[in-house]
Length: 208
Image 1 (cartoon, rainbow, N blue to C red):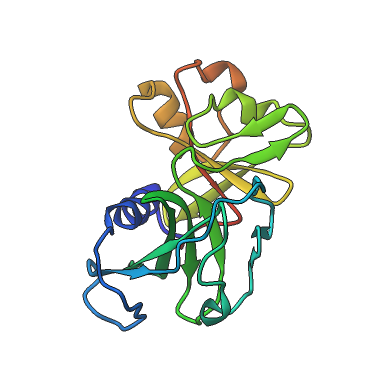
Image 2 (tube, rainbow, N blue to C red):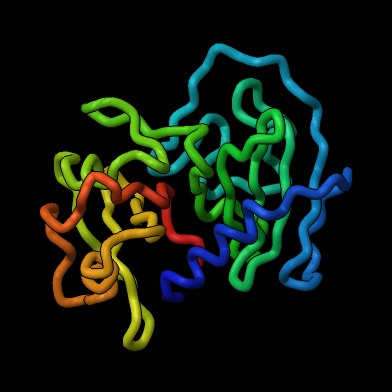
């Protein structure tokens, strides 16, 4: 697995890709290239779509990218395509606001769905959870489990609940917590998470 730095780089590339082209392409161009696909703008719908372990609305893990709906009311009306070192990333936008990103590991399929910003959420017994919420809420989920993702001598802790992966927003976290996150011997304890530590990643898997 790649390190936490690759994860953050992949997510940054996805959010940065906001061009204005009208045709999508999955060509192997330079890794920092991005294309925007304009789709038919739908009328806002009443449905509030939540991310689950395998889908968000009509978008399911395993679907062919070419068969995805061009637009879904109240979910997305435009797609931004970015090539990362490990995958093609398709960020779905609604009114120019990122909603979620699909990662395709070069097989033309939906492999991972990751939420972008706080536009979308998941449903839990204690209410909705979004990127940017306190990470302590993840630790309080019933049955949540920690999982260390490593490559060579580096890695980072994630948490998994109901098939969904959660990662810490490492911006301005305490140094002690940063060290604990990269130490594979044990996951950080709940007491090590002040209220200022936020959720930085919610997805069906990891984007690498």
